[in-house]
Image (cartoon, rainbow, N blue to C red):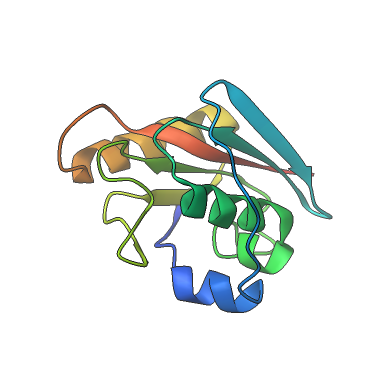
Length: 138
C-alpha cells in the first residue's frame, strides 16, 4: 500500500476541536499516550515544541476527527509525524513546510523512519527531524 502523506491544516484542526486551548509544559523526556476508539496515539514532548504546538498536538491525539487528518479512517496502518526542531511545528499560524505526517505503513518503525526521512529532506537546517506523534491502530 502507498503511504498516505498529509499536510497538517491547522485551521481545520482548530475548527474541529472548537479552538480549545490547554496549558502545555515542555519536558523533553516525557511521552503522553492517548487511547481512541481505533488508534493509540503517543505524543513525544520535545523541548523545541512551544505551548501552542503542544496544545495542538494534544488535541490531535485526543480527538478522532482531528486524528483522521493523519490516519484516514479504515487504513489500519501505522503513522508518524516528524518535525524539524529549527523549523518547529507551527509558524505564523500554519504548519511548517518540513512538518510531515505519514500514515498507512505496516509498522511503527517504518512510519517513523519514513516521516523522519521526508522531514529531513524538507527542513531548513539545524538538528535532524524528530518524531512528535506516533499513531498505532487498535
